[in-house]
Length: 517
Ligand SMILES: *Cc1c(COP(=O)(O)O)cnc(C)c1O
Image 1 (spheres, rainbow, N blue to C red):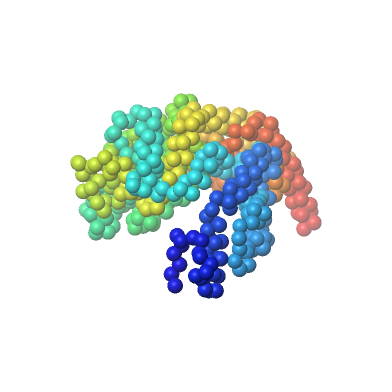
Image 2: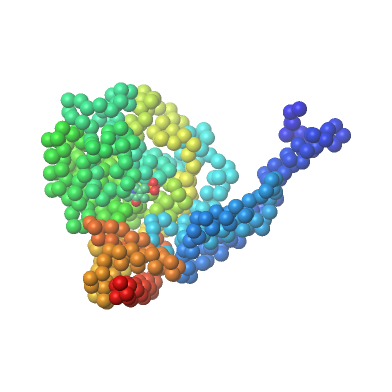
């Protein structure tokens, strides 16, 4: 018998025993959707998250080994049929919060994600409860309007003529980079979409990328069927930015080898040190050679919001496309990425399934607002609204202030570390990322790379500071990323003291081991 869920309550008299069981189960299901369970859950979450937000002490990562975490997680699972228990819900939230990185801690300096602006996180719950898949206007009206508004705000900062460019939001810069290079490929080789990738009289289709590119960029040639052999690496200079002379030589060499480079991918904010490639010169080279310039500005693209910082990514307005990650340096919940195309219509070349529609001169009022035909994603979280909402409430200057502070703090850290004889900085910071090494007293003759790695691990395991490491030309460096505006000079001094303490221990341990051996 079919149960009509809408006819509640089930009339007792007319139900058989079997139906009664069904009715009980349905009752539970109804509970899961009623306001009581919801209100309990929100109250528990609010309490836990408020504590999480206020926790700015030096306790940053107490990571459980996977087997132990698996056991604890299993122990929290209902056997058989369950019902909502605020206590168990709280236990699960605690487990999540306790075993992860404490992003509000003043010791958290390791990665490119931060605590998110709380109101934007609250909106994440709203959009999860009231979903609006954002690719089509009918299903996601406000998200599509938010796309447009933010694209206009950024367009103004870029000096672009209103209505002359395109922006689509994607879930992550990895996807945005791929989409942009796909658009470049399709513009250059109109037949590939239908006929597949093949060499023509101009040579084998190839892309050129900076030697320091993010791994999402290095895998694009494989994904798009160009083949990794058709990737031209552009060498970087001593500031780890694409070298113009090196780039010209590499591109000339590629042409001689029969490669047809249709796209150059540069970076504004390299993952390793936050370096900005020389964009105006690269734009000129691309134009000269008929190639598309895409800028992976996942990290530093957000500098556009700052009057002080945007000069550092000058030339980005000349690129054919670029993307920026709002879930990094605009402090949004992941993933929220903006992919800009300098010329209107170019966004439509990525997925030319309906080319006539995209270039349709009588594009209608609704279709102008739709991103579905320009975007890889079908069901897409409306995370652009998180950004628009925060922008609407606090204004652009809110982002500017936080970014300015973090970049300035990194400059201060650089100047301080550079002045210490037992430390060496790897570069001038162009962003909020800084790499350096520590040479403790008595470390001459020890493997300095292994020592940095050991330092990084011991610092992490001591659970007061959390930093990362990166290899730069064969040299292992410690790496800090300033994402938390609560951090100040004292925390930097504290971190260096912590590093020194572990440095002394490591030298003592390793020397003892050598003597013993
Ligand atoms: C983080 C990052 C990416 C990847 O972006 P996701 O949003 O994580 O997909 C790509 N390039 C650079 C330079 C990055 O910093």
